Amino acid sequence: MIKFFAALPWLGWVSLGGLLCLSAMEVRGRTMAAWQLLVPPVLATLVSITTFGRSGLLVGAAFLPWLIGLAVGVALGALIGWRARFRVDHQWRIVRLRAGWPGVVAVVVFAVWCVGVSLIVVGGAVALAVPLVVGAGLGAGYFVGRSVALSVRAFRDPHTDIVSAYSVNVM
Image 1 (cartoon, rainbow, N blue to C red):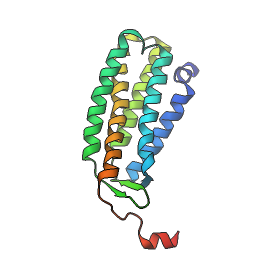
Image 2 (image 1 turned 45 degrees about the vertical axis):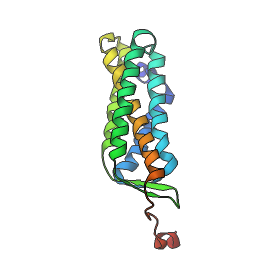
Image 3 (image 1 turned 90 degrees about the horizontal axis):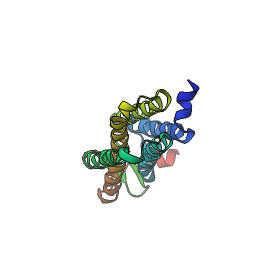
């Protein structure tokens, strides 16, 4: 059991925890700062690179499938991010994503891929290496594409009052 947790570096576990916390905010439909849209892709890419870099799977023949998965994930994430419904308050620089499950589903699937890689490192099941590498690239790319699309839309979409005058006076 200790080998399993040691297979994924501590930075990977911390990044997965951060991804889960940020996606929990999306499930609840909470307001977040606009800069928080840029955190999930950094964490997801960090998890993907540290996991596969430590396992040695990103060198050689598995690097190209990871890049293909990353490119497909960026395209898919950009499409989903461009179509997502959310409100932007330019005065307070905050956004409110509509309550939904896409972020959590993506984090759980991404975590399963990372756990699979840990099992490959511990158990030596190399036959699963390429699908897991493609999946991790797809997961990281999804977060990158979605974040870029949401960030562009956060600057272009019209202003909506998320913070009302009453809530400012109460705070």
